[in-house]
Length: 140
Image 1: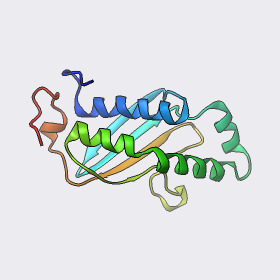
Image 2: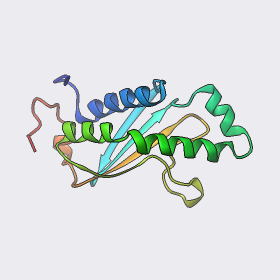
Image 3: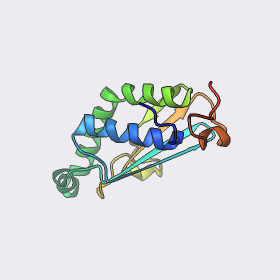
């Protein structure tokens, strides 16, 4: 349920934490949500278990862990995409949970326990709407 005092970013952050808990069983330590020019970035800190951190340090473990989280995200991300659309009024065109770090692109699972999720929206959300609470944000 929406809380009128929360911005879109705060609502999406809460939704992302709930999504992460439902798909992995872990609650992230913190979350950051940023939107610019139709790109929505959700960063979840402390989203890996101690066992996953240990696996990531083993030879080949990081790649195995990334593959696991990529598959998990692909099979379960529709619910969060739907929630982002409900909150923002904008459809999510694409979503990615990780990309190979060697390419310089976004990484979803870091060995430090940080997860970054990137969503490409169908259009940009104006700053005055993004920062407004739902009670004063215009409908889309």
